[in-house]
Image (cartoon, rainbow, N blue to C red; front, side, top):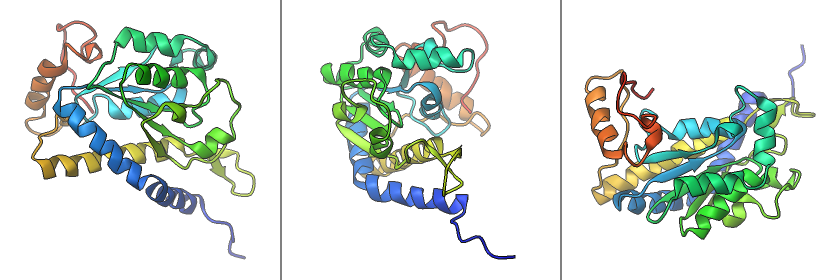
Length: 256
């Protein structure tokens, strides 16, 4: 049986991960350098995405090992789980992104992180533009390559409003397999999650070098996790209402 000359799917993913390191290595260090003083100054990291980019919001918010000073910027309309078509319409609708930012009212020393592979829909673009207008620096986690191949639905793109752009190297259309005519096996979540994890690792190294203790969630499945997280809930609960649904009653559930 002849050996398949095409690169395997795992090999193509590994190649793209290497590409992220090459394209975004300096920007990842810049993102960490932006985040650390903001957190030290008491700022909140506002994180946004729509549709499947909400998976990356989940990765940043209330996540074991993740930053506690994180607030999700979102509207229920952009969640595809109970109405997928509605989420697409909402991401393309003008005005929703700006209203989400206005409701959260971020202000310096806060930072915004916006995940959008194409960065071409009004929702992520408006969030970034509104945050920038409020002097809140924006970290865009996006793919300029995918953006160039996407249908334009806003007069600008996400990267236009960003202080730092983290290039995830996602190809147009997102899918990778088969290599000669890709139609399946989307890779944007893998690449964006890796990019964000690299930011967290860089941020940790920077904090250690400067003698700063970062506010991080601990898994509830390790000894002392509940106690450590309780202190963080008390510290950030008032500024991140999504942590407790606007109430301090009811059973405690710890980050996974």
